[in-house]
Image (cartoon, rainbow, N blue to C red; front, top):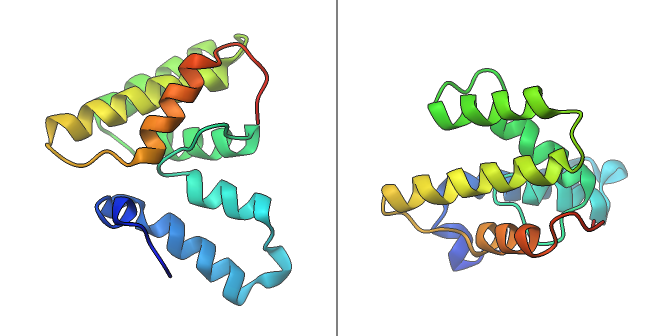
Length: 130
């Protein structure tokens, strides 16, 4: 699997790339570019994410087995505001900001896709994308 330096410097994201390669290799009948994008972006995000990409990113981030405070906060935010307009974008912004803050605090590299996703969402708040 060819990986960028950015990805190699972000080991927690590697499973998204190996999962995409696994499906392409072993389950080609389920593989297409949309599936590929959804799987690869679920750990880093990316600019101009589809609705399906945002749903998987958020679902992974806020899943109930995650116990750290930022996850609990994002989970509560999402469920308490799920009927609000643009909740996916608002929750994405929250999750991406928390991720970036955590990486900065741990002096770890921020994947460029994560920064680009956050910037795109903030610049396009309230606009239809994906």
